[in-house]
Length: 120
Image (cartoon, rainbow, N blue to C red; front, side):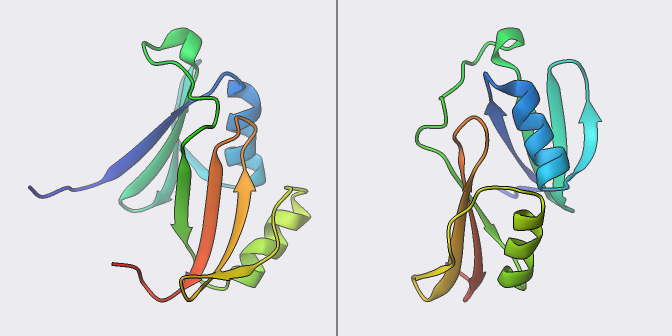
């Protein structure tokens, strides 16, 4: 199997707040939007979308059991930018030989930002 791209879809009861978090807080580019679904570009082959469960056949997981792991360059700069956007986040710590910090979106989904050796 050859996977060409990936999109993680989050079904969020706090849809408007979560869309604003990814759009304004994380400053991600919107590549598709309608009145219940917004798709954001992470890079050329990866997307993250926020869907309103009131309009979908899948319900919210209430932020349980999800960690979105994002490898970045210059983790201190990424963290500083998020602090400037007034996003609540953890301090940087070392996990599995990498520098890591965590953020939760308004729905409670955990985002892990990390820099270091490639996993896998």
